[in-house]
Image 1 (cartoon, rainbow, N blue to C red):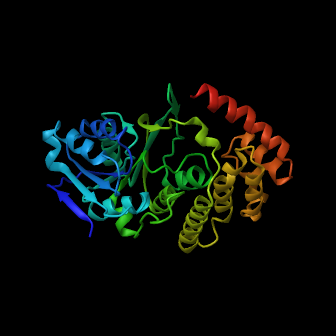
Image 2 (cartoon, rainbow, N blue to C red):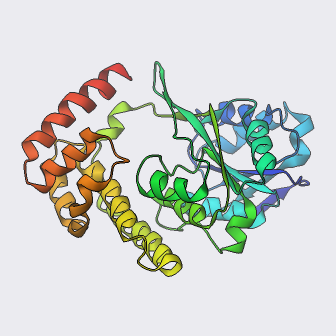
Image 3 (cartoon, helix red, strand yellow):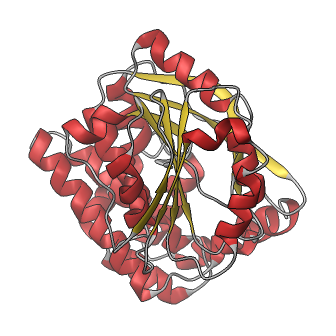
Length: 336
């Protein structure tokens, strides 16, 4: 049976932090969370059967913040269950008004939760989102998000249209949005698990954008952009897309057919960001019915639509050229 170490809980924000093989990162992550200017925080660390000494390092870090000790819960999986299951374990015990997910190899600015919580309370928002930093080995890139005043616009144009990412970790979400709509992360299907944010956004009535980068998403290996997906990853992505589409069609019928097509196009786009021709075959096989909408998605930059258009026409020489010039040069050299 999974074990539990707990003290007492507070009510404003619950932070859920899954832990697995992060011994080189957990101290920086935890310190950035314990030093938050917001005082009323519930910390839920989920040890997903990490085989290293990440938890020992965390416990040592906790000792340096005695004022936070009574706010901390450590949950332990006896067997590794994967990231989505770890998030669900945290959600199941969370008591905060809002929920924030932080990956344990990343870190945040000290005023992140105070600023986002104040923004949420100011408009009784269901969801608050912010900008973030993409952190490479030697530098960082500021990643901005579009500003949406209406939840429907963020959901349709932003998340489905691909104008913004559905990352879990730069969003503060009202916990009732999870509980009232029975929304959980897809246990056992880690790749694409952040599509859960689309289902949450579909249920949100109000959103707030805070135009500041609070979150540092650590990407030490720039070549990860071009890494080949495993067959397991592909299965997970298809599962999560199918689950998302099923949820949306049950809620909205076929009124979002075009937006869902945009979502499918955005999901299979990474198969074009490579020079591996086998991945091009996957792109051709996945949701070909969505290809007719390529030119209609004005939320995507022209270069992205052109790459997809070339792919739909079978002109993969142009796709390969784009990858070698933009991704190999820009991300592989400049942002390293």
